[in-house]
Image (cartoon, rainbow, N blue to C red):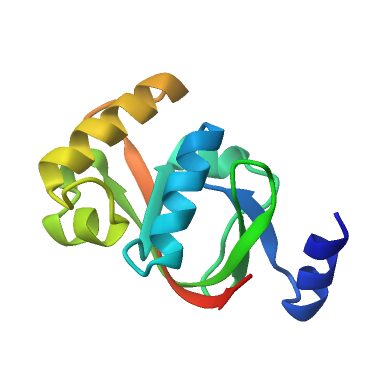
Length: 136
């Protein structure tokens, strides 16, 4: 896509990806980023290791909506590995989903990781905090 290639020129090394595992989830979570509610995300360590391109601290990501269109650019400002059972209220709130509670976060992410086939209460997650750089 020409727009994505243009953005990769503007943001060297940028990677492009949607949030979640469905078009609906990609739209919903991208909207939370655009509104400034979502400033963090996570994935299973196993999926992180298997990605062709992964976020890096200081790196840029072009966030795609459910149709694969770019909607914004974010910059990763922090990453760490944490077990699912050790996720904090603070991280759950930064993820910006539902009522922002840890309870809501755990239920939704348990279901997500079960669909992925990787759920365990002690599974390792790669967490990423980011800042919104540009709305598209």
